[in-house]
Image (cartoon, rainbow, N blue to C red; front, side):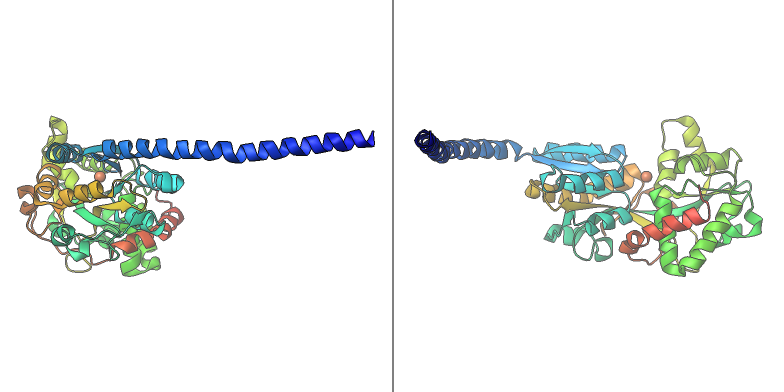
Length: 366
Ligand code: FE2
């Protein structure tokens, strides 16, 4: 029995040895075959994909697609666009890590660009074209992102009920004379979060909180709707002054919808804080993802979007302020005059974002 057991054991060992050796030789051949085949496949795929760039964006304007189409027509590089909310796209990039298909990220808020950079989702990009087209103050200090457009968060008012002399600063809107007259969207909106983040930077947390509380006290209604809805509410007489971004007025005035166009034409724009800290500005910007697989094409698209051609389109069709020094704002924006901008490093809008959200909660800004 014992001898039989040992014979069986020996047989088993030989079997195991054969299987092991088999295991080492067989996959070795397969590995060779596997590496050969996919190598060819990868090459083919790269060749096929040489005409592609994949973009994640939270911008929601038709102008952008028209620009991607123009880029595609002139370069043959297909632009695949994934739209989403800024934070969702940042979360997705984090989750996808090195596997991401995205080569570029565009967001309509400097705070989100800062967030993407802080999460190590972007990479430094330098090019003579970008350096020439985008002034230093409109790009990240480490070249992780470049601004494409600038916008101001201004006061929009009904000239029937308010005169420009009544207006001065964001801070002045907390005075008793503005009780139940101020319109602004919810605190979950990134434009408002960056506005408050800038006040935290300029005036300190305590003053920023006082401002937010004072504004809540003077609101004409609980925050609702988007920026355009605030202008509509001004014209409807729900309130007298609204806080909103400049380009929306341009888009409303030139809207195909006659009611919206009427609203746009019925309100006036005021740049606050001209004698003090300047009107709050924010940017839309673009960064190349850390794991971009079509980096050459991505850089080409970045350069194209900073070109005079694209910058003119942002200015003329979307009523944003171009960042390219040689491109002028649209006639409408020029008609509002030049204005003093708030001097806050764009990274501070991101750094102070969490604190801004806390302050909004503390003062119960819905
Ligand atoms: Fe917007």
